[in-house]
Length: 322
Image (spheres, rainbow, N blue to C red):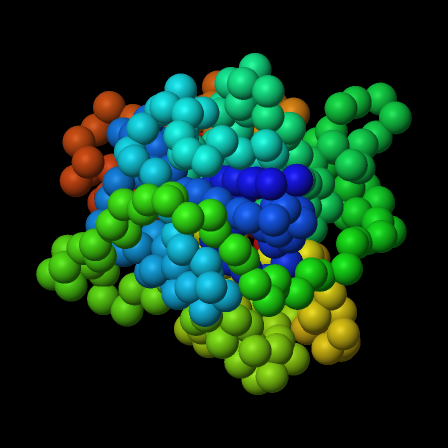
């Protein structure tokens, strides 16, 4: 095996990165992130997301360079051009993670068919963005679980693969060019207190969470004023942290807080398996009851009605705790 391409999408990390570890079996590796214009134009390109993504890419670039690797950032492009990138040297194998949801501005496996037709071996990896792969747990009568509790019972009994260490070296072939990494938007465009992206910061937050926060998670995770959640959601979304590693490390810490946290990670997997089986759930009601979520009032009147409890939702359907 001479040259392998690893296509990063929403798995922007070095630790527990099956696609990268598989690619590293080749003599040389081209780490590739392609900024997909189609995803950017679909609403991703807002300042907060672009800032977090820029942090992630720069941190990943630094981690690769520490391992004697260069970084290849493809152009803003379509999957058609992605299949021809990089033009030299010609890779013999391409690896990436399987996707069941839109990626953070990175080109997805739409490249796969074109790469295959060009005679390249393709390897697609599960459990990179979920702890249990979508489709790995199914009921007897359907292609996915529509209710969480029975899903969680089977999910809890699944054997998770071990978390992988980061590769020590990543050798990139000579002559592979790289585009400039994206700039971070200016502070005046960003929300106050915006989280810093990147695997380095994500792993720092995880260590702090396991040391100081998870023990009280069961009691405080619904207390808004307590601010006692993990703050790891953006890192899971961009893939700077591995859900497989999070489940393993939470279970190792033990206690009711860890169990409650693992349950929330299972909820995340649950919705991913719903989305994989029913892609339309990303933009339409999963169980439609023909609800009218907006009235014909002006936005100002809607807000006032919400504040005063006059939303117009049928009284007969309200649930009151006595």
